Length: 94
Length: 483
Image 1 (cartoon, rainbow over the protein chains, first blue to last red):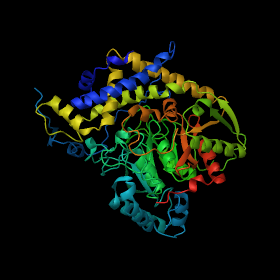
Image 2: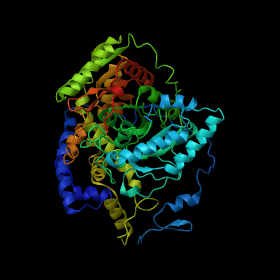
Image 3: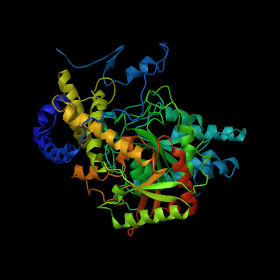
């Protein structure tokens, strides 16, 4: 791994963030230092080590597929910045 | 009325020394007097609290009882409470009113608690100083020019400044323990899976845990009895029995083996912190416990591992803030893509963006194996360090932070330095073990210092037992800021 491979414009697009030029410069500089620190993991031999995604032994939890109403539907919809009777409104897609 | 502990107030309410409404009024009076300086709260829930206190008084009059009947409690503002704001101290959730109660809130309400308000925090719990809040910077009640710690700094400061009787925080990399240490209070991060995360706004889902922040270990045990235990609404909550944590507080601690992880006493430790922690260890020995040196050899890799994995999870979790279903939406967009990017650019603060970007990078095509998978493997090694260490001891003791509370602004321009200050707390989250902070002395500048107790999986009982016995032997937890 190498720290100079951090393409901030590409990553920002993937993350759906629109950074100002000034932010790109400042964050880019900071990432150099952070990734340099992270790169010390290269010293660690992890051959034959299983990855841990979760600290507890996870099992599938099964239950009956029953329909339940936790909250009133209109309450959900009313949280949206723009909505009409039964749908969310967004700017033009195509 | 000088504010008592939860346990004392419970007795006094039952003895009718004062009513729940009078207690609540006293707490709000204190908040009105000092919170313009401390700035611990983002919003108060006066009407709801008043109704809850009145209901508690009716129950008390009828001779009923419940574990927290009439006790004023504060919530970190990333825990959802029905029909009230839950902002995560972010612009993107500035107007978000939760449609439901978190499981811990349901349980607090059922236990009779009076929920007085929501406390400030680093935006989305990302930070170690509370300076990343969109709304305000909470100050340390011991020195208003210093940080209260983070990310649960508002909860820490509120308990320390007597602006509530106890509070809930959340801990992803030390966010309960470090502010508890900086503010001179008691804080417990439970074992991962011990407390339901349903209704806790997600930062890094395989790390996040809710826990109590209180004046004493005894109060922490009382809160753990209420909030702990399996919850079908959180599929990662552990289906293991919940002991009565108050029942074992007085157990004999003689003969318990305390591990001293040598890597936690290496270079860079502030002289006052080292002295206070060593003094704490001496006290534990004088109480009949034995010490044994242990090693956590992968400690030096913990910060790197944590920032890869926690940021990766955060970047996925925070993708939900897109301006469509709830939260802030930028008004300056003519198409969907612009709406997403403008909303997130305007809605998130810089630290949150930094972590989303880092997390997106380590998960991106071509870098996943080198960073994310490598981090997951390093996490295994760190977890194994703890499993090995607990073969030799019952619990471990260490500092919480290399230094006491630092000055406002001191580390703000250097994110890496801020990240490295979490070195002693993040391993517990990587391994999933329970850990707590208890006050163990003051620095020469009159700032509190925290002693970390780290326990084995689901053994919060031993931590609370040792902490309670320590607090019967010492008076560090009784010291208050002059404020």
